[in-house]
Image 1 (cartoon, rainbow, N blue to C red):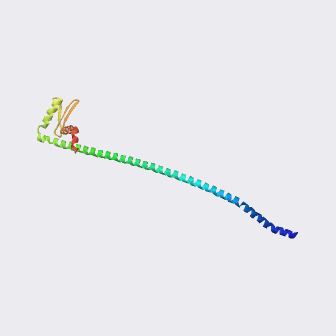
Image 2 (cartoon, helix red, strand yellow):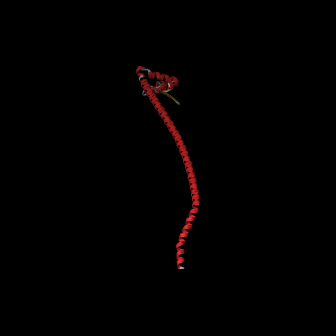
Image 3 (cartoon, one colour):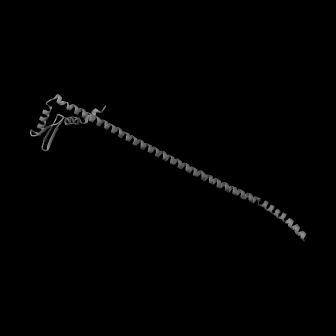
Length: 187
């Protein structure tokens, strides 16, 4: 029997291999069907992933466009606001320069009128007497008169005072110009 065992043992692997080959051959259509199904599933998953990726990219592009549009609008609004502030500042500076020039012109006018009025005593030697007569006419004969250094008169009564100094008269003349003084600096 030992020979039979040897033969059986030698033929057993060959039969087993034949059975495997037959089973493999029988399973080939099943394997092919499973492989086709797996590939179809994989294609569907990849297709869905591509669609999802495209949708995500489209949404991201739309958000980027919206952010860019909002930033552009905000930039334009900010630029317009800055320009408006710059224009307002320029208007204020121009106005301040005009006012400063008018103030300087008015001060120069006042100084020139004062200088001209101080020259009056040369041309009118009785000017102080005339101013004293005017002070007495306004306050009465009991008014106390004092000569001012510029050639004018200061008249006082208890509770009343009248200054007829030459500088005060010059200032009254300039102040009396009122709105007409603006003609000095208008073109």
